[in-house]
Image (cartoon, rainbow, N blue to C red; front, side):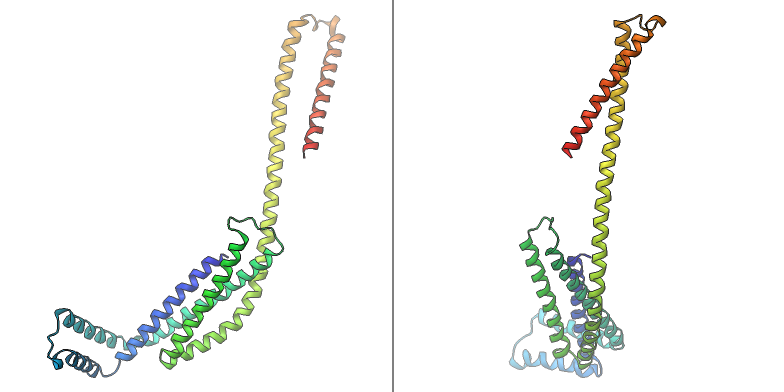
Amino acid sequence: MDPLTLFALANGAVAAVKKGCQLYKDIKGAAGDVKSVLKDLDDQFHHAYEAKGKTPSPAAKKQLVEEKERVKELNKRSNDTTNIYTEIGDYLGAYYDNYHKCLAVLEEEEKRSNTEVYTGDASLGKRALQRVLMRKQLEQMGTELRELMIYQSPPELGALFTDVEAMMKEMGKQQRVLIGKQMEKEAIKAKQRAQRIEKYKFEFGLIIAGIFILICLGIFWTWLYYDTQERWPNLKDKTNQKQYQIIRKKEAERIKRALEKMAEEENREE
């Protein structure tokens, strides 16, 4: 699991909660007697311009009309508060889920940084700073949600925040333990996979070396055959078979010694 991905998911959930809370408040504020709300807007507009002898600009009139239309539209959606309330709860749960997962991954990375050699592109100091900043930003998101839902929203949203926070806090502890175990297993598998790859590379290198040696031997024996034919054309006669066998035996022994020497040099290099 990538902490940056989990952080981005948590941040997206926070943005969705904020948007949902604002929509919930707007709908709740416009629900009920929409006529009184529209009248209140007209009164405010009148006191701001006509009561003071000012002529409202076309832009101000347009803004008033748009606000009235927005209030009417929100009033039509007064029955949507239940769905919005549920969505806020879902996004709030998603924030805490990714929050605890991200913290678990960061804690596991800190543990591994003390026992494993880091091979990434960023320096150790930069990675440590990223973990600290990420943790602070996640905590700041939680503080902003608390302020918004408890102190700046209807009471039911504050109660929702309190319930979800308490539930996810306990679940988060369990998730940290499980995620830690899962990351340990993944690290072991990754290490084993890397070892297998190195083994395959070594075996493949041996196969290539073997093929190369066979090709060289084939070329050598072919050359030896034709060279022998040119230098001793009568060796194949029955009267010269013994001498021919002696020459082949000497050449074979010389090749064997050369191959043994090559093997010893390769072992010393390894």
